[in-house]
Length: 370
Image (cartoon, one colour):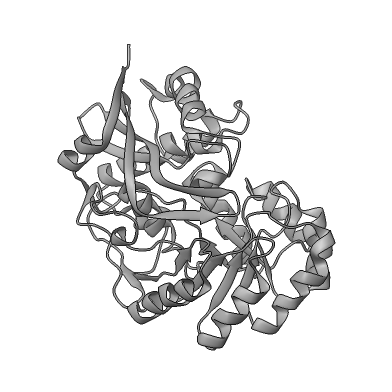
């Protein structure tokens, strides 16, 4: 296939509720959508999961736009591409900027699947017809309200509850949740808020039978996490520390974690995500798909990835209605009793709702092959 044209939309959508982590609180979600069009007019869609500020990684919407316009789009537009795996090879000389790379690669994967009359899940080698999903809950300063929020999601059937923690908002909060929900799969996400000086505090979490504690230490660390994992019983899951298959290999060899969170944008796209999945499967390390508060386009990519066989832990791919009054795909992603049914239509399986997109589009950019 030849990518003849690329369109980028700069989007702004208001989330239903504020979302708070150890880094801060936000409710307005800015992001980029990328549409790739081939020589026959077929289209594929990708989403940048970078935030407006570099709190999760060094990437932002503006740095992504710069990389897309000045470096990445020129490498793919007008070029013949036989398989989406080739995109990561084309981008190999450009260091990092994984979320920008993933934006392009995701659109190419969607386009490839449509051209070959396959679902994106099938194109990736996925096997599941339904996927289990969990929910990610931000920090609530009122623990009683947090308990009621969790109760609502448990009653809806979500298969795993993830709560954000930070120093001063950790052991007592988890104790209260475990007291109220003794049998619910529960995990804590620290977003790098702790250091090795907090080992004794983190040891206290062992009594609550957590599925995992996600990224407790520095976002670029695998050494200290190995030290911590030896000291605590709770499995450590690495998120921000893992950007590639090589990072995965080193972390597992060091014993830095027992679980890996795969986020498509963080690792540079579906091709690298699949490599990490396969390596972890070979080594008996379970994986799950993390969320980045995506719109329906990015959420659809997560659904497809999660159909691979080693995604044995529920991910963060909640339904559209969890975050948005109105999503930009049709039908919206729906969770029923903790499961999402994998769509059977070609590509990502959901149709872009152009009318809805237009409501939330701040700026449009167009690039054509010469």
